[in-house]
Image 1 (cartoon, one colour):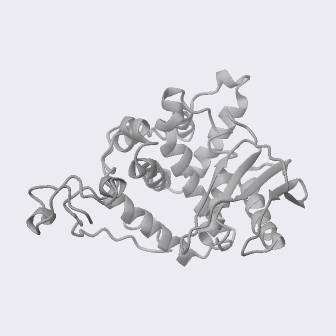
Image 2 (cartoon, rainbow, N blue to C red; image 1 turned 60 degrees about the horizontal axis):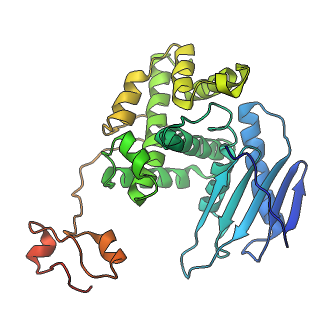
Image 3 (cartoon, rainbow, N blue to C red; image 1 turned 120 degrees about the vertical axis):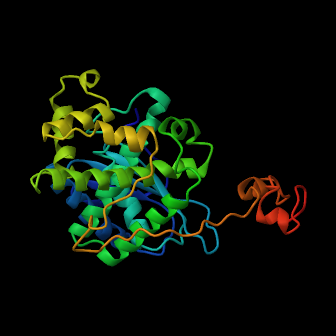
Amino acid sequence: MLKSVSVGGGFRILKDGMLRIALRGSWKFTDDELLQHVAPIMASHQKFWGDLPGPYLITVLPIAEKPNNAQAGGTGLGDAFAFYSTPNMELDRHFEHGLAHEHMHTWIPFLVGPMSPENNGLEEAWLSEGFTDLFTYRLLVRDGMAPIEETVETLNGIMFTYAFSPARNATNATLGAEFWRDQAMQRMPYQRGLLIAAYIDDRLRRDSGGAYDLEDVMLAMRRIADAASTNDDKPTLRANFIAAAKSVGADISSVLKRFVDNADLIFLPEDIWVPCEKLETNEIAEFYRGFKGGRTRANGNVVVGVDPYGPAYAAGLRDGMKQ
């Protein structure tokens, strides 16, 4: 398992205590502005997990810029993360979330349980990625680094995308097998996992009368993992999650079977985020183009997969036509 990242060459090194940021290139923000954004995120996460600051490295690399399309991504590691972005990226909520998400991977999954060896752990991505997203958003809001209005807008977008995703009913085994082949399959563990985390968090609060929530379970996962004498003795991520939930009196096995294994649709209670906002569930007509858009783009915009019973066929579109 990868634990760190090493780079060499023409990098500038920024320092704040034991934090080091190695970056190169020109950006739309100054080095000091980047440092001022990263340091509070790290402090927030360390406070939540009860950890003291330790040596940590972030590498920031520029990638090819695309006009009017800023992009960023990264890979979380044990005591570091590698971050990459187009130079036209602003220090906005998307960039900040990306930084916070990768830093949260220091704990989820690395310190709360090893990933299952099946499919390189992809079948547990609902937890390693989805739960990471939920706690990323929660701590950014809680510690005053993200306006709640912007976070509500982001969560609305996640729920909307989940509802209309062609992968929404894909089983967890299918998602693990197709993760690197299909964009919708790749994004579904993030979306589904965040909603599962929110659902279980709400259920824990209700069932315990407010005594416990998902934060208690995640901290219990950390304690269980820390208590193991060797890495081989640590329960895998899903097994540890079930055990940690039981430690606060909750059996969530049936919830995981429904939403993870069987891919049942997740409907959240309308008062799940009250008093912040009330959640509404509505029925919206689903857009259907009547041909395979992704395959058509990959085919040089030569139309592929026209549904003979769909609207595109009725309008005269046929396989082999050039868009």
